[in-house]
Amino acid sequence: MSELPSDAKEGEAIGGGGAAAEGNNTDAPSIQPQTTKPPPTKLIPSGVVCLRGNLVQETRDDTSVYRITGLWSMGLDQILADPENKLALCSDFEYEHKTESSSSGETSASVPAVTFPPSGTYIGSFTVNNAGVKTKVEEQDVVLNFVENNEGFYNVEGKGSNMYGKYTISGTLSTEGVITIYRHYTSLVAQPTKTNKTKKKNQSHK
Image 1 (cartoon, one colour):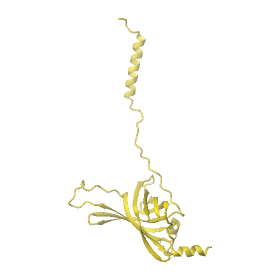
Image 2 (image 1 turned 135 degrees about the vertical axis):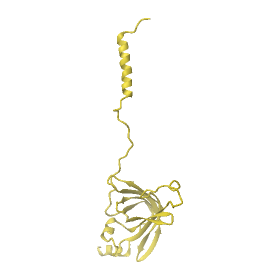
Image 3 (image 1 turned 90 degrees about the horizontal axis):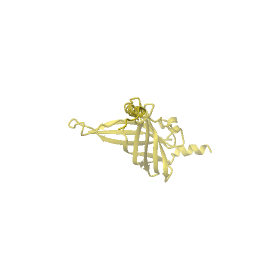
Image 4 (image 1 turned 45 degrees about the horizontal axis):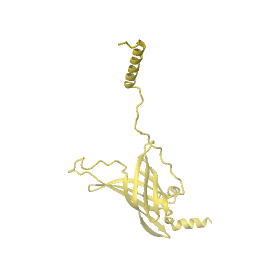
């Protein structure tokens, strides 16, 4: 049998060595999971239905209750201008979320750990002040999701509906527990009614 040319052997050795070198290359970049946190949601100063309050945790028997209470208005500017609602330009609202807490007789495996703030389904309502007559409006299918942003607090995303229509939710939760969220109505059945004092104030400027 004839012997292969020496240059063929050298080429074969180089090719094999190159493949081995590529397989052992520890400097090759590895694919890492996406860990970039989003920037904070920008607050809208006016013109969008706004709810602003505090998120607190309470314990009732073996249940952790997360309550959000505060004021809502037709814009964040009205809430900031009158945080104690002395001019009655705002109305009350509340949301509530419950999770089972572990008791002394339960193991940690039987009740999953709950992160704070808790994302999930919330029940709630808000008050409408129409010419001095207050009406309670129930919320339906409210879901709030808390996403940590790149400045160390949380963005709030979600959705819900009420007698006025369906809406999406955006906003923020500060490290002090102050939550500011907006309702962006996607199918508006009826516009939420302003308070009687708000109407008189608008008429006085005409």
